[in-house]
Each structure stands twice: as C-alpha cells, then as structure tokens.
Length: 77
Image 1 (cartoon, one colour):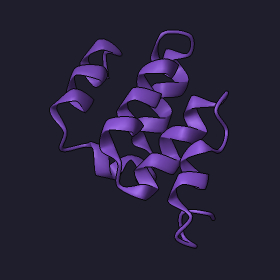
Image 2: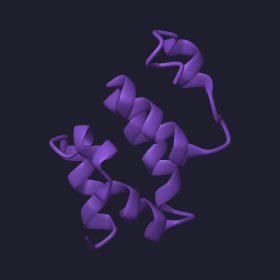
Image 3: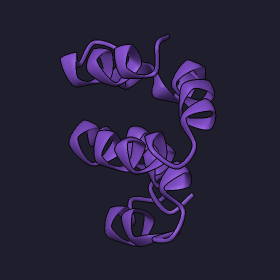
C-alpha cells in the first residue's frame, strides 16, 4: 500500500525478514533488480515456494529478464 501512496522507500523497507513479500513489493515498484535478489533468497530454502511465486501475476514484470529464466531453469520449471 505504501508504494501505491508514493511512499516507495517505506514500501521497500517493509518485511525485511520475508523475501517473498519483498519480491512482490519490488515487483509492484518496478524494481526488477531488487525483486530478483529477493527471489534468489527464497530459491535455496524453499524452491517449491519460489516456483509457485514465479507463476503469480505479480511476477510478470520479471519474466522477460534473463535472470528470471536462469532461476526457472535451476528450479527445473
């Protein structure tokens, strides 16, 4: 919600211990670099969760990025 209200820094700092939520916030803010960094933090401990999140509509902004394809191949998706 903070991002929608124009409070980008506040939104970006939300949920520092939850990389999944961070990924979606950064996707919403259009920050693909930080969104992919957050996704990378989920891949090792929870590969199945990362794979599911990658299918969600919020992650659409990442799908054209070559790094997204690398992560997807690592997950076997």
